Image (cartoon, rainbow, N blue to C red; front, side, top):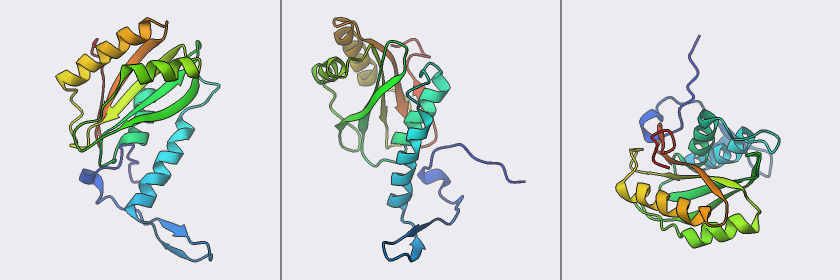
Length: 176
């Protein structure tokens, strides 16, 4: 029996191939492109969150953000806004960047948190380089964002840094 891998799709495990097909509007099937597979995976990641279940399990949070952000060729900062019971309100990818940088503005994150009436939020961004180790700038920005959100009574619960097959939780490291 073959072991099922739960690792995110990345360039280091793309040889573990299963043929996937997509159906065209005319009804014919053809091989799915890498972009179509990744796009479908990002949509399927929505099944990892439920508006009826709190996002209180760190492993579930990491799994969700890996499914959404791993494999992107540019940095993307994403936020999952939560209500007072830690149930998801809205997922928003709010900052897109280059290969090694995405600009995150605490003011914009605070405005969105207030607009959606969030009590807490989870943040993640990806490192297309494949290394999930947070930079000093990542840690500094996390602290700044936490302070800005605290002024309006919104809690920053975690900042997850995602790479192709791994992720690092700053909360688990005591850096949030």
